[in-house]
Length: 141
Image: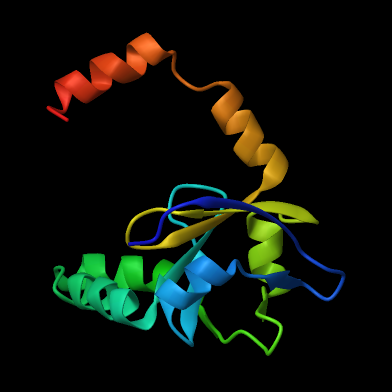
């Protein structure tokens, strides 16, 4: 399970020293792509990517093509170098507004890479403890 949050830096060459704990759980090669519906980068293990691919392939043909165009066309393999760095292509960095400081978070079955300011903004507007408690109760958690 991919959990935890890590503050990281992208260097001038677009390389990110991916957190060792998450790297170990993802395996030697993983897939990075645009997140659907949010301005961040999704990171999948090859195993999880295969599961997502199979789900998309099982959709009705038109839906599968539409989703596949977005999901697969923007994906690339990432293999950490000896220092644990991965290169994030410029197009993905621009999409997620990744400049220098980022937040890498484990989200159970995948990871997300967020611009640090966007992440902080998202969670400064976080629901109050009372609202979170009500949501947990509503979801029976």
